[in-house]
Image 1 (cartoon, one colour):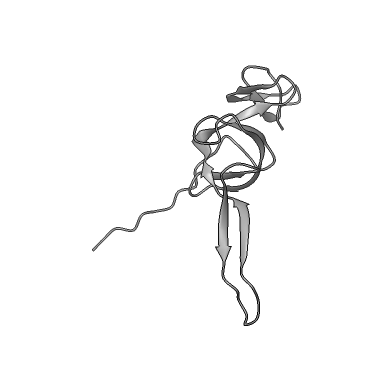
Image 2: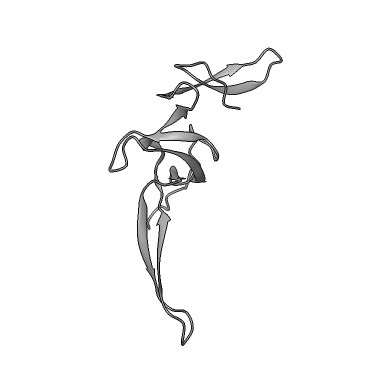
Length: 114
């Protein structure tokens, strides 16, 4: 008997809506916004990154096929949070505000993300 692999939800350093910079791969240096996240596979979809063409067959008779361009996911370790004010990529750390809230903060700039 084979043991089934348990899918564990990974904790990721990016969230939907964050501005990130791609740090490796063919789109290295590209800056974009995180559109969607797949936490089980630890993948993110970034706007304008890893754009591929997808050929779609016609669904009904008489309908013509389409060639769509869309963003495909990349691994979350290939992106780094980006500060639009300072124009620099940085790692993230957790800190507490004066009222006791836990927030995400960029290490290089001290900019609070949440």
